[in-house]
Image 1 (cartoon, rainbow, N blue to C red):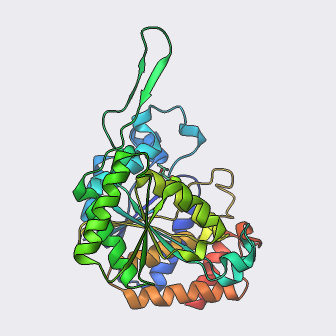
Image 2 (spheres, rainbow, N blue to C red):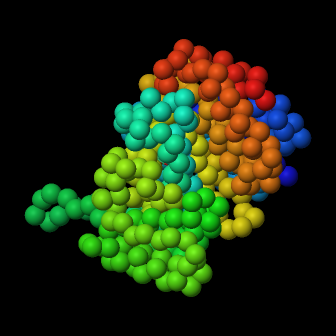
Image 3 (tube, helix red, strand yellow):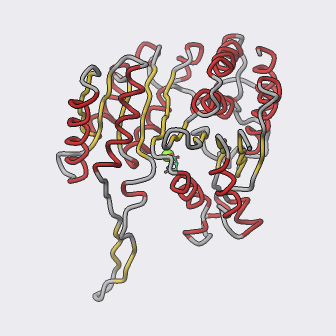
Length: 350
Ligand code: IPM
Ligand code: MG
């Protein structure tokens, strides 16, 4: 059985995954690794961004680590063959409904944020984004021609009680191991799904998690509070679309998009999907200057959440911290190291 399936994908994906392989070889040489095509590069080679073979291998592994997908060269591919469609298909196919996106400000990087150091220093937020429902997957969705000219585009935002409850449980459980607070974000003032979201979270909290502090916040206000006073948040629980937006905003607060990992989890025991949140970065792909830390920290999350190796994960996290303390920096965080040199700086600390 494969422990970790690697999907290097597109853009800087292969460059950063190469560094993960070196870290894995040193830290956990007994792990069984495998690799499959995915994303735009898979579309070019096989005519689909997510082949049946890759999806089957993902479901059969203990954990999946993706590099990045997408790039301008696939902008005109048919919509259902775009790299992004492959990613949505992988998330849905693996059933990974809870997306954990930490926004952590590493102290030596607090000055790299566009916000003042005193606002972001010590920031440690965990965003729990619902990942397999909502407007990303709701039916119907289409663009149609209108009889009198012009067109009409339709997307559907839809959530069931069960979908809201299972992701909320993940958020409450996580909060208990952190600062014990969940902020649930929706637009219950204008959306039916928002109203249902608030009711289901409130009800679950009363039944099973009354010991956790629960706060409800409208998603637009949450966007503002994130730049005003981000340290008020511990765990942010939100839907697929708001989570997409708020997690990009939170990531930028830390000043280190190149450092942030993510985990997508499904039912207990099912494989998790891990990915750096920085995307394929076509502007710097192939130059060997991408920051591999987000991918390395995504591997760290895989060790912790899917591979049952918390101690190894702790060691890796500490090594990354020491490398940063020692001044290791790629260009995105104000330094000159190459991807390979940054990987080596972490390896040297292990
Ligand atoms: C993300 C990305 C994806 C999303 C895209 C690439 C489909 O923005 O993981 O946040 O919208 O979920
Ligand atoms: Mg996004």
